Image 1 (cartoon, rainbow, N blue to C red):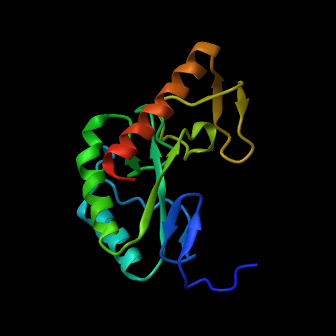
Image 2: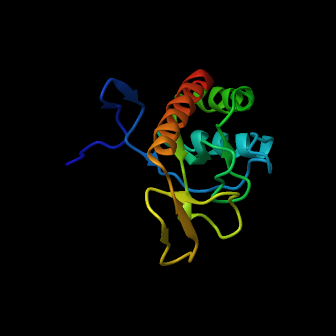
Length: 159
């Protein structure tokens, strides 16, 4: 049981200033292409200034064709790194940690938002009613690489 949530905490080898974690939600403040905006930076800056110890961002798309919601953060290309670095640097000024949520939305995205809807098997999502096309083994392995590349980009940005 957590007894002192305002005290420093250790998560593996990461020191957190407290135990308050803002979980990931879609904020919709990136521009249409997925670039960081001043509004997005200010959103996370204000969260970090409010005293939370750790922030998990809204989701970021690892491939251009899969965009589960509008105005979400892009991480599928190096061109996104400078804006993300600016965001991370602003949050780190308050000794707050920040994690980037990497995602492939598939059929769970908002209808009409993705150019291609994929999944490990062909299926229709029970809520969104979107139909996912089945990925080949080669495509799954390629997506695994895309997740790794997105993680490398996130690390370069300071996450």
